[in-house]
Length: 100
Image 1 (cartoon, one colour):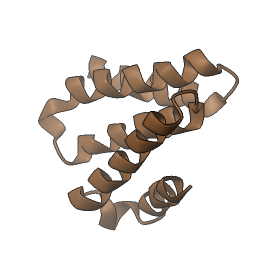
Image 2 (cartoon, rainbow, N blue to C red):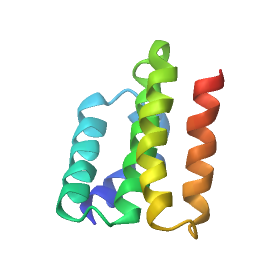
Image 3 (cartoon, rainbow, N blue to C red):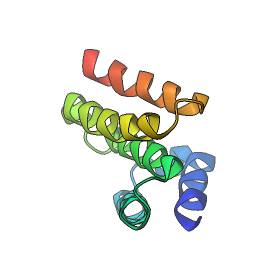
Image 4 (cartoon, rainbow, N blue to C red):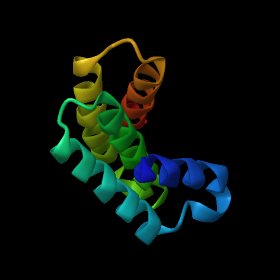
C-alpha cells in the first residue's frame, strides 16, 4: 500500500519528481518486494511496470530497454488478470517506448 501511495505522490508532483532518482528507486524496490511476497498480486506487478516506465525520465537514452523491462512486468500483471484497463494502457506505453 505504501508503494502505491508513493507512486501516486510521484504523479501528483510529476514535474518536481521526475528527476528524483532516490525516491523512484525506493518505490520500485517496494513494488519488487511486494511481488516477491505475493507473486500473484497483479496490481503490484502492474504498478511495478508503471514505476519502471518512469525511469525513462532519468535515462532517456535507454528507452528501449526500459520499455522492454516494463513490458515484462506488465505482462505478468496481465497474465494474472486481463480485466484491469490500466494494465493494457501501461503495456501500450511500454511498447511505444520500444518503437520510439
